[in-house]
Image (cartoon, rainbow, N blue to C red; front, top):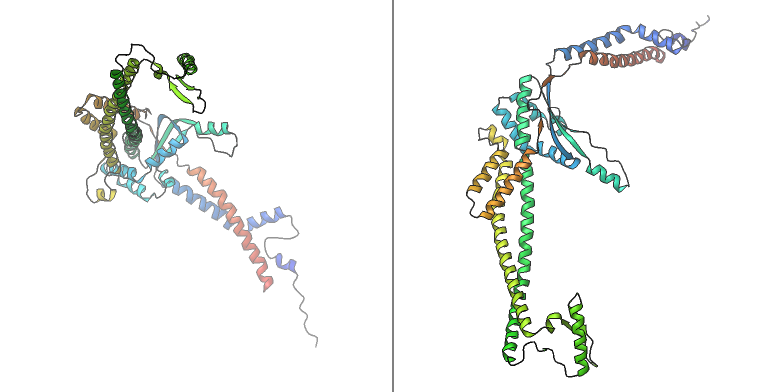
Length: 440
């Protein structure tokens, strides 16, 4: 009996079981595949797109308000401003104010924001115009121009879930920028002033010993000259003080005297005698003795006046240092404030502003003991007011705008993405359907 013959299955027959055919062009095969899997491709894509559009349409609308400050800032100053605003102590102040206004939901959103990027989804800063990118350049002029570039406007945008919420948060943020952040500039100004005062006081302390030594030296010189004057009382007035044994030496001295009087340095070196050393003479050494006494007395008076003036300035610097240290302590304590955990536990909430600092300076001015210290406080008061007035807002009440939901645009984008994904899934399923029987 003949054994039954089982012809081998051709690969083309296995592939023809699916929607793809090797004899067809790729485009036609792809369209055939999509049509064969139309329920998966079209149904999945439309379902996902409709789901995205429905979620965006039903979710609550977001609102935003933008306010602008006319303030010139370099890139470094802008970076410092952002660090100050997003610092933990400043955010604690803002959150405390939000608690006072009953905006607990907004507080929860800020608490969940752990990074500056997530915080910028609620409160965002922008410099207008944008700072140029720092490219690698070897030209010092180009680098200097990039470093000196200043943005003319500071734009701040607040996001929220309702118009009232955005308006309340915007009022708190603007109040913080205009009343709290200037305290950092005031603190830096005080630290710079304290540094300059300490340097000036140190210079006076360093010069005091030299001036005292010079004063004692001039007093001793005056006593010696007065003793010579009394001993040479019988000498005729206007006589020559310097006397030399050699006639040639005397002629050299007379010529030297004319050289000293006509020169600008007033100091001349006398040629050395044979076997001797050179000698230096000042113009005063050739004056009559009475003139030398008057010159020493004038020098003593000058040194005494300098010491007296330095002492007065030194005492004033000490008073100003004590005063500005108190002002700096007041600023630093206000910037630290009360920790937010204590506020949430029922502790007192402190919101120190620049206006309160001005009131504190006014109290110090009324209790000022000396006119000079009062003048210094008035100068500091004017400079502080200028630091506060630097934040000039363009418009007092920003308009609150609703953000578009863009449900249609996002739905179309979701449809395109889902079409690509479902088409790729359909290709994988067809490949599995065609090749799995062949393996068996």
